[in-house]
Length: 375
Image (cartoon, rainbow, N blue to C red; front, side, top):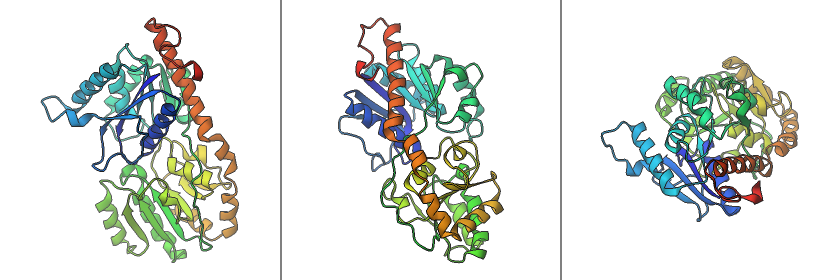
C-alpha cells in the first residue's frame, strides 16, 4: 500500500511523534510511505524516520509568491498528491485536514485526524467551520477521546473513530526521596498555561522551599514567562532550558509531572508519565487529562484553571513519598490500554478500510489499494 502522511511540521510536538511512529510502523509492514510537512527545523526532523520513508518539506518549494500562504500550501499538497498517487492520505490537525481534503478531492481517500481541541484553540473560526463542512468527504475521522468526538457536528459523530495515542513506558525514571523535582513539558504558548503554573509555584514555594520546576519547551511566550518568573522572585525555582535534548529525556530527572494546560487534545506527556510510573498533577481541562488520570490513583486532578488548587495538589504530592510510590505502581492499567501494538492495530484497521474504500470507488482489482495482510 502507498501512504501519504501530511502534517504541519517536523518539530517536537505530540502530533509529530505519533506521525513518526505510524510511518515507521507502516514502512515495517512493507508499505511505501511518504511523510509531508509544511516546515522542518534546520537540523532536520526532531523524531527519526526509517531510511525507506520519504520526507517532503512543502514550504521550501513555495517561495513567497503572490498567493496567500494557505493557498500556496494547498497547491503544494495537491501537487504532491498527484505526484505520489497514494492509496490513502492521513492528515493531522485542523488546518492540514482542510487543505488535504481539498487537495485530494474525490481521487484519494483521506483519514483526517484532529489532535487538538478545535472548539477553543486560537485559530480563525473559519478553519473549524471548513473542517466541519469537509468532514463528510473523509474516509474516516479519527479523534483521540470520546469527549472530543462528542464535540463534532452531530451528523459526523457516528462516523468518527476514537483512537488514543500509543504510548510505551520510558526507561530511566528514577524518583528522588525528596520528591521536589517538578517538570512540565510543551510549547511556550497560551494553551499550555505555564503562566498559571508559575503563579502556582509562587504558592508552592511558601510550603515547599526546596521545590524546583523545569519547563521543557520553546515558543513565543518565553520572554513573558521569564519576566513573570523574575517578577515573582522565582529565578532559583523555575528554569526554562528549552527543548529536551532528545525525546523522553525530560522524564529522567523528575519526580512529578505538572500539566497546566488551558486545553488539550490528548496530552502525550501525561500519557508518557502515567505509563512510566511518574505521578502527575493536572488541571481537568478539555480534553485528555480526565481520560488518563484516575484521581488519587495515578495522579491528582484539580478544577480547570484553579491556580490555588494546583499549588495545593503539588504540595500534597510532594509531602507524601508513600502517595508518590503508590501512584508509580498504578501504571499497569493504562500501560495495557495504550500499548503501541494495541493502538497501531486500530490504525491499521482504519487505513485498511480507507484503502478498500478507495479501491472500490476507482475500480481497482482486489488487493490493489489496500493490504490483505492488514485487512
